[in-house]
Length: 367
Ligand SMILES: NC(=O)c1ccc[n+]([C@@H]2O[C@H](COP(=O)([O-])OP(=O)(O)OC[C@H]3O[C@@H](n4cnc5c(N)ncnc54)[C@H](O)[C@@H]3O)[C@@H](O)[C@H]2O)c1
Image (cartoon, rainbow, N blue to C red; front, side):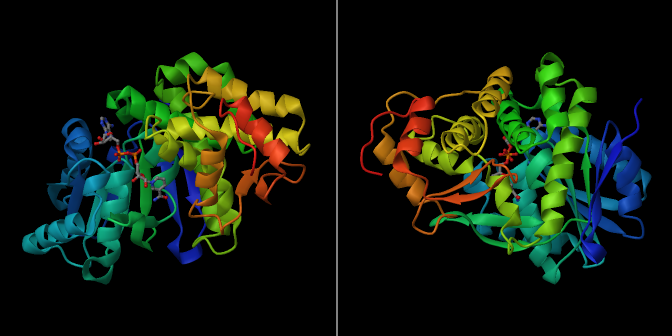
């Protein structure tokens, strides 16, 4: 049995470890919560049924009294209403400020339970136990918590760093295929952000990765977590722009999700967005064409789409990209270049249309 990987999120007094490996929940949860009397575990049926025992056994072994509370599945449950209902359950059970919350689930549980923990009694500690690949490499790390409003996603939230993140790749065995693929889209993002070692692991061990081999997964998750941790440490609350690199591939992805009527899941749209970002950077002579080809090859090797659904119109997609919440009216991309990945505004129309054409988005004149 290999030793777990420990990735530090270096935030001074708010710093914490992301521990990745088989059995880390049993090994580490009790220690993280030592001195606390009680703990509420927030989960969902699909994540909790197969995996709550992992958390409950660790809490029992540590002598920490606990309750398991379930929330609904899907974005429509990531709401203030859910936070209120969960808070009532915690209060009714008697959870105190000196106690703790554990989030066991994907990004929806993590974001909702995170916001609950940020606000319940003005803040209680939370441990994130991510159970989707996306949550392990992205959402469980960094302290961004929040819920949706009718007016849009993630419009109410808070920064609330966890006291620890425990990622056991064996829990991914039960994840539905499409959810796993979506996580791979984010893995591709971290690899293509310039992690050559990760690119090599993905390329050399593709079958094992696709088969969810826990050994390869531990290596991949740890590498992605390290990349996310570094960005979070450099720009904890998204003030300096450093955190923008995490949106690599996302400008087009968000537009495709909307334009395609959500035929593409988020991670699939990110995959296409990465192929596009590579091609656009090459069109702008920021990177050699071979590097753009590598973007496409990596995405393809992971079984992810390299082109948008047929029939999307370039003008429509460009209009949607202009409305991206991270843009300020113009067209904003995050692109590779000689000094790494950085923000690039308003590229020339010719390059843009060529790159869109390369991912199957046709037509378009006025940009
Ligand atoms: N806070 C952040 O920094 C951040 C970053 C990226 C995304 N997000 C958010 O994350 C959310 C998406 O998260 P997600 O992709 O993990 O989706 P999700 O949380 O909806 O999980 C996907 C599905 O898989 C189920 N599931 C989870 N773990 C399982 C397991 N091990 N076995 C079987 N089923 C399991 C869930 O119950 C759910 O049905 C979005 O709301 C997004 O806004 C947040």
